Length: 121
Image 1 (cartoon, one colour):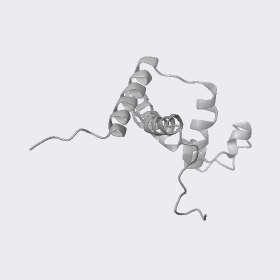
Image 2 (image 1 turned 90 degrees about the horizontal axis):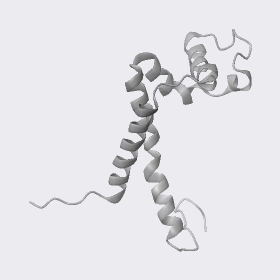
Image 3 (image 1 turned 30 degrees about the horizontal axis):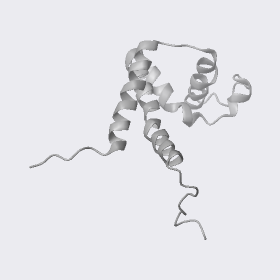
Image 4 (image 1 turned 60 degrees about the vertical axis):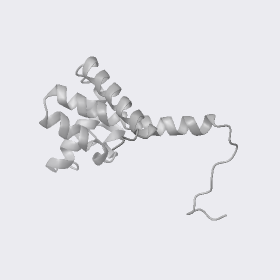
């Protein structure tokens, strides 16, 4: 039985997830203003029913959709700091294959993008 090589995007995914997770661990824990002000409090207010009890505690960001920050809130709230940083760093690494594919496409020299089957001609 012969082993096949992994597709390029799988290698890129593995490397980018490993690199961003490693960076997150090395950078250490961070508690900046944005994180405390609306990434964490917005989800906390939504989960505890305080969304309309407090008047704009995070200024304009009070009205951002809290579902975007839910994974961050849950990982920070329920995981040790090292594992929360590892998980959020690894999640950021998923962008690696997307950037890699876009860069390859832009450097290929083709002038036009292929038409999508969903888009009319």
